[in-house]
Amino acid sequence: MVAAGFASDSLAQVKPEDHVLNRQAAMRLQGKYLSPMVQMARGRVPYDAGTVSRNAAFLQVLLQMPWDGFDASTQRSKSAALPSVFKEPEKFKAAQDAVQKEAAKLVEAAKGGDEATVKPAILSLSDACNNCHDNFRKKQ
Image (cartoon, rainbow, N blue to C red):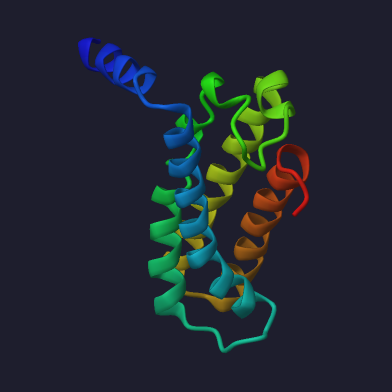
């Protein structure tokens, strides 16, 4: 219980602009590892089970990282986050959970290595990411 309090206290001391930079960095890395898999799932590049397995594992971790960066102190910071992130926290949390759920499914599918099972899991994760962006991120 003390550790949780310590983590919360230390997050409160982070400058809002650092929260924004950290969450943007995590999401940039998410794109780095998801994009090649989406290209595979769409048949634009050859399927590589090893890359999918590695990238899926990285994504499962990376997809846990940005959420504490959406601290209330960042509401007025320059970023692509829409006000709905802070006005509809339950919907935002549900979108986060959906992304993480799809990532877990992809990791499991990748363990089997079956391309026919993995490709739909990749696209489901991509759809979950896009759903979150559609509802909580300014169009760029």
